[in-house]
Image (cartoon, rainbow, N blue to C red; front, side, top):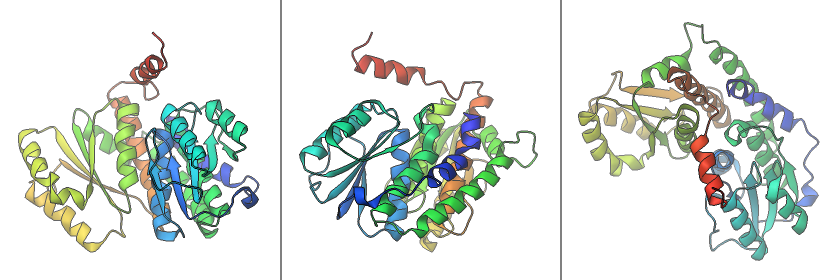
Length: 337
């Protein structure tokens, strides 16, 4: 898992270096729906935010067996399943096919690849051999290549993604050195050992990373965490948060912030910390990415939080690749013992 995190940037470079994805495989569309679960959904979450800034049509992400009622023949549906056997994605893709939608499969194989062959859907093949959450670089780059080919996103976005991956790789080299006295993710991981992480992202900038970080802590570190978003949490959850922080000394708040967040978001974060009595204390951690664009900052923050989950696994002496209970659930859902 550590190697996969360290080399995530190479997944992006490798995918972007492939021959250009043929735009002739796509017909015009007026909206995009991304289907995915777990690690396969994260890329859709992040690209959706980038598309809000730079895209020409709306994009939504669905984690379900069903698809929204607005999905029709004018909808481009990206069905993403790393294994190709995710039952929710397969069910939703079948519904989209029935609606006459235009589908593209993002997968390493399995039933989704077979379904694509049966219905003549284009396939963007993702290399096999990874756990889904560890193939995020391949997923991100594949989604962007398809959407650029469909003229939903500008070609410049691929250049920014490639440049951001380079920055991500430089940062990963520093984070991978556990002997460094300036290893930020290792420092944060030590602070989270034995704690309840309460993660807050920001709508429009780091919301997808809040979901990703919670999931990485669960799968890599075997740590239960919760997440919500600013500014929404200020309209409800802040009341419960204050009570929980007062009652539970093990609860730690982690803010995932971006430098371009609205100035009122930064004020809300500061006031929330003050009112909850954690401002400037060891019960508050503020994390952010670096770089000139949201893509750069998202990728570097992704890398930072992935390393935190990895080091926290080591602190807890658990295998960051093991997901036994999840595999048991899938086996039983499939009718196994």
